[in-house]
Length: 230
Image 1 (cartoon, helix red, strand yellow):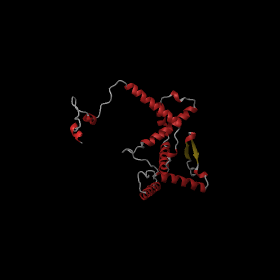
Image 2 (cartoon, one colour; image 1 turned 90 degrees about the vertical axis):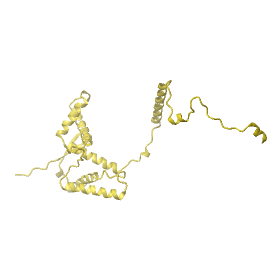
Image 3 (cartoon, helix red, strand yellow; image 1 turned 45 degrees about the vertical axis):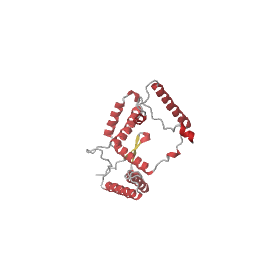
């Protein structure tokens, strides 16, 4: 009886819309170590994604929590627990955000394969593409795990690095165009409301207005004789 050859890894190349078959045994020892280090780095750092300056302002607490999350993830991997599925419902289903991403990727794959066979995307309804994507996901659950890993990696990157939006420069032409559009909208609203009763006055303005048929009292003035004496 001969030992079976180890199964290859099926790595999805998203931009190519194709799977790449990889035999881990083909790599030299130092490259194997590098691959494992990169994989562990991604998985362990992804476990700390929720610890941000916003969620945990104190640096010492954030660092301690991050190390605790990473250690727990490592322990889970050692115990054979490779799923990082979050609990969205009591029945343990895959979170909606993961399914949304997996289905999006599945649609890309299905549409690419349909196009390769001469089918036109416009000839099918959105419902048909969704059903085809769901069928693809049912037979390729690895895509769900890939979507989950991608979401965790993106969350880790987002938490680790923030972009300085002050470096963004507004386009003067777009600014002017947007101002013109807002001015046109205001003019259209004013034209539409022309001839209509104005807005009701506030309660404060109503209270400040004198009662109907009465005049406010005039300030008292000294008689002319008093002024003449001085």
